[in-house]
Image 1: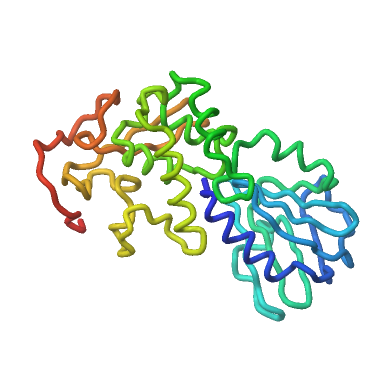
Image 2: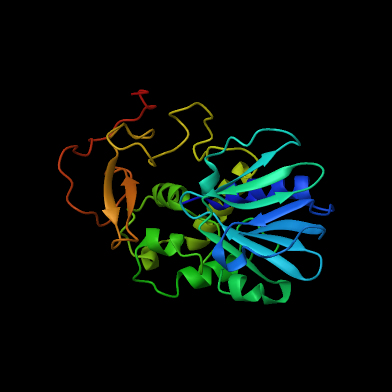
Length: 282
């Protein structure tokens, strides 16, 4: 699932290409809006809200899209060949004289009145990268269900908007707690919320969701995607398991030495007895 910083970057690219210009070409290749005629309407702005993207058009219309797991937007210069995927995967096309934005495999393509955007965004928590960011409210929402597993509370967009599986796992590591620890046991929730904000701010204009501060491939994350590889802090092999119920379960990662708290039984690696070091690069 894309993180909020990925959506922020894509919205910025679309805004640069489309905003302030009339649409010379527009297609919504979904049954509900296949006959919508948007050509000639000026694009006012493209704004992210958590993981949602809102393309506002003159005349009081908003195109709401969401990437979920596989969707993405590609931007092409005039005359450039579209290479983002086969034509049957295209769900939306928005073109101006400056370029064309093509949405591939978008699971959500919804045209609505701009005045109805509240139906989409009002259920979301404070946006980590938005002007409405409110850390006090974010903490309040996180702690409203104190027995909830930490990773689930962080992923719930109704608590704070913009965290996906990468940052949820990395924040559990930073907190020193396993993903299954009850959110109510978090000693300093305000500090973790601030750390979440710092992570997304640092990465909103660059790819990679870098959480360690190390830009080298293989060193960018503490535990996410490192199953069986050494923890960058203590060199204990990182463990992985599934969390949640299908079809909403997801893979989580944790270091059994650096992170205390409940965890499922995982055969194979054993916690180290200590030590420090950098990843071996394996």
